[in-house]
Image 1 (cartoon, rainbow, N blue to C red):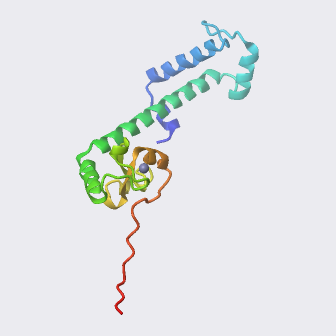
Image 2 (image 1 turned 90 degrees about the horizontal axis):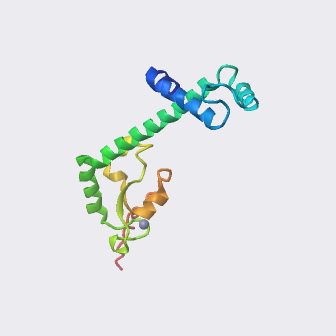
Length: 171
Ligand SMILES: [Zn+2]
């Protein structure tokens, strides 16, 4: 759902709150007074030139509303993410990954004795590959600094490369 559509679905009470906020912003900037009379005609004319005559308050209200909606969406995404990390399915898988690789950062070699937290990292980040969020093969062990450094943009696989097979030569 686009932001515009979300905004249209707001209650009139919510929209009014944004309108009041928008007016408050204009008052704060000294452009209108508390009776909504234009005080700074220069600034008002500039705003009308940008947003169109009669649209200043509406546009500001819309922008404040859009920001509020984006904040709410980010909060919902954070809650959803927290629910994932709290789930038993994730805790079971996380444990499997630690058992498989050991609790040592596969990038820098740090362990908890180096005073770092050990994270189980999604190699291909959940934000881009939600279908891989419960795949053991998509997990690696990283310390917190390495994990933060990697971020959700990097997809480097730091797991040990498969050991080269030793060919026994009999002579
Ligand atoms: Zn590390």
